[in-house]
Length: 260
Image 1: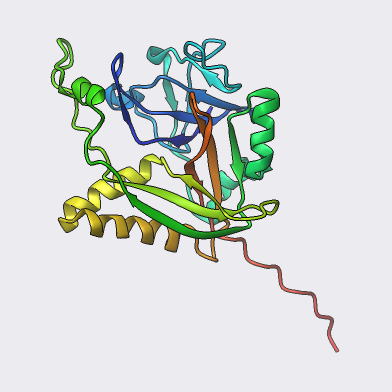
Image 2 (image 1 turned 45 degrees about the vertical axis):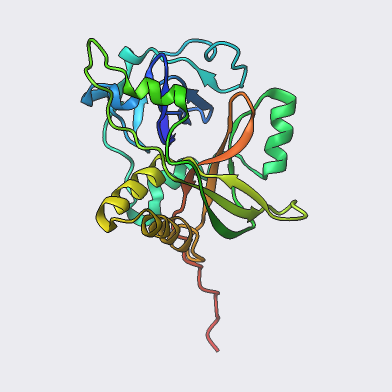
């Protein structure tokens, strides 16, 4: 499968921390891999976005997760196949795959969830209006903080995992929306960018503005053909933006003008 989605890690009592990971198979089927303790995998299993991997999967996801695409991976079976697909030539290698997949509105995805438990898909917004930044609690909830404070007999202290002190939400409209909708962003890249900028600038507020410049001003610019990878959060099944696909718009073909 080609990895297209990795969310920011969250603590887990059983696995220390988990990253929701998703992608598409060679036949174009969406698959969600859960659980994956990504940062605790050996380096040779730490794949990146737009990288092909092989992995053995169980038929269904964990416990009562009945979402169509959820599968439990055999973590020891993960094999990385080559380098990530490049962004050369207008992201041609990536577009060849993503453009061939079905695109929906959020309302259509919600209907597909109700009818067949579809929980992953691509949305091309008709309009991306804003990126809202909301302050949130700076600490993990108590039970998750307890997990992060534990020491593992085999792995030592858990790796540092800072909770982001803001939540970020796209405000956008699909072609069949009577009014704008909001969706929280849980993209791994957003979290990494925020932490990097917070260290560089020494300010969480300034780091949040850096995220806005990247995830709204740049990735949603009029020159980009921006799509959202969207997925549901279990067990509430709220639709989230779990990744952004933002290749440049292809150049327009010049109109044929016959010689006078």
